[in-house]
Length: 398
Image (cartoon, rainbow, N blue to C red):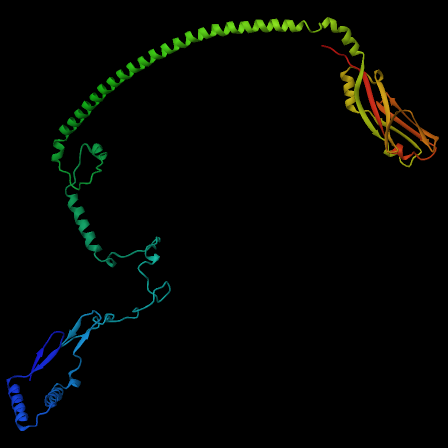
């Protein structure tokens, strides 16, 4: 029997030369013996498959192929590791900190973005022995050796004060002294270039100044021309305005004089002013309530004269004795407003019941009111008011 391997780990069984010979003998036997039937070919195939199964022993062959998580199908002798199955790598030795949770408490691990790894904290003051720091003794020994070698080259400079004020701000770690030999020529050339630039700038500035002065002179000339034009024009306008104003003033004076002719002269007004000054005009008024006379038969009161009346009399240069006094009693009678001069006769049931009298006490500038009744003072008197009017002369002037 010959096995031939195809693609994708598939196999096919083919007969070799011996098997073909034997098969031909068997076929001839069945053909010549008359035992051949429609099932003879199937019988041969069936028996061949049974023999192949017996020879291959599928139960003992194991797995023919396997596909791992990486997607690659593997056949033949396959070695599978923990990494092929995407398992965690083996940690040897495995200590107590293996596979702990992240956190900020005890027995937890610190994550890479934990703020405690980047926040600013003042370090605690502490001390170390030189031997505790790896490599520090070697570094210090090297520095000490360099210092000792430098001390062998120590010397003094006469121009130390000048050298002390020199400061190097460049980035070179080594300065070639040969550069100093040409530095004077370079500086002279730079200075000469600067002086040439300054001379060029001065010439340019002088040219610009000359141009500006020319423009200023032109503007000045234009301004003077405009100024003269304005003066000439203003002079012309002034003369015209003056002539116009004089004409209007003369017309106004003439018109005013004509209007004055229609008015009375002050000398003609003297008799009228004298007459007006002798006329008595109102100085002031005040109202006096009689409500305090309720439930009384006799009522007497002295009411101070209002200060504004006295002030106006002083302004007019008049005294209270020079005035004319008016007393009016204002009351209601059958829903009609009545007004009468005082003294007032009080009538009750068509009979005389009493009197109301008023007067002036000049010594203390008060109004005296006196009511006398045989019975209680009637309501129409209690609800009434006395109007006190003062009149005097007033000097009229113009």
